[in-house]
Image 1 (cartoon, rainbow over the protein chains, first blue to last red):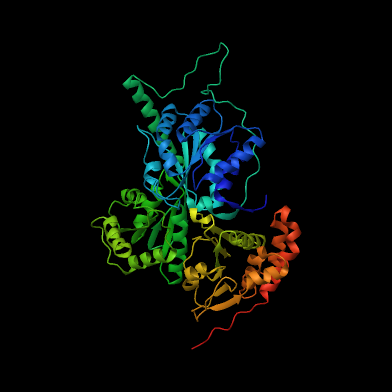
Image 2 (cartoon, rainbow over the protein chains, first blue to last red):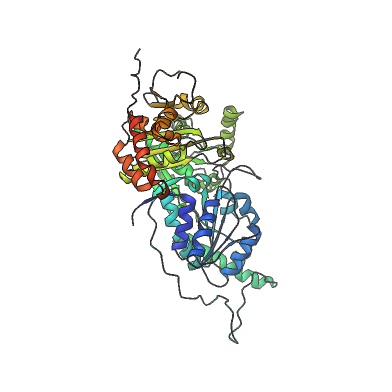
Length: 371
Length: 184
């Protein structure tokens, strides 16, 4: 298939449909709406259910119900809408049924704005809903990668009976780039043995997240955690750029990652041996490669479009062995490559320290810039 | 080799489509490309712009603060983007909508009465194509022929009867040449 110029939101929608999405439930919100809009036309066209729910709460609970039938289902939203879905996500996790969630992150907190941001990292990667559970989180940095990871998301969700979140931002959602869409896949015909689809006198099957017996609940918790260990072992994904001989390593995901790539290239032209580690799975986090880089690199620079949320995951791996610095923009402000280049140069010029917290130093610098 | 173009104007001036046409052409020519729109609520009736990055390798940032070229379709766009054009870059100004001189001396300036030319050709709506033509005539980015071919392929079916007009608009725009940069 040839490449076409396509908007990120539309590409994810079409990729999901071609991956065998059997039912979609959602509610419009910028900068995600084209995703829902595309499916509102395409799903009925091929005889599959599309429901614009009365709210995000309705949408996620429809996903929950439909997921229990073993069908491929998804929803999508943007930050404030995803907040409304948190209870439902916890129930889905507690029921161990597969589902795919797309969060096209915008500036916040609160109603915020509709500009690109990465402030939902903690909510999506470290919880958000109540109870002990994880989401498997994929963070594409381009329209093509968003297409590829959408198909993967459904496979992983079913493989592990897990929620898979695709964390985008307004930039990737709204941007057009050439991408090759996969061919239409046939709908899957195998019905998982846990699915509830109505039975005529057959064996009774129950899917629920309620478990009033704490020891029995704990057995379930243990199962979830073992499954997560399995995911951590098998599903780590990342992309490294110029890291083989890198003395300095920039770590950034999604849009912040690709902006950092421009800065890394500019720094290379100045003769600075710097590389980029771009996590593709945020959960599980690419700890092993970061640990390896910690042994070789002189220092790290974490770049995010938030106040340093992934920064904490980086620090947990680096554990004070090497200096870590941070640069971020918040509230929907998208950094330019030359801002990141300035930070790379600052890293090279030093002095570097493993004392204190990089966020505090960054906040001091940022206050001088934006008041 | 990477080049960046910001196209800016009022909503309705065809700013986003002009950028998409450049992007389609780049795609057809086998290049990497990103098209990034301003998508704020100000789009409705207010100002609109898009950034197009064209490159031979995987594109990093889809947003730039020092573009190779700017197409300013109106005065607010000139005010906003004049100072951002990279040194030696190209600034195409729609003289029909701008009533002041460009201040910069270190860039190529193409001043073109795009609305008047488009009206003369038969439709003011071709203003964006006149502006795009002026860019192509002054920046080694993509050929006029390649953009015309992309128009053939990507202009929506309902607008196909406008192909000759749009191509003529591109050609007329390309006739305008920038004044040489004054060297100190």
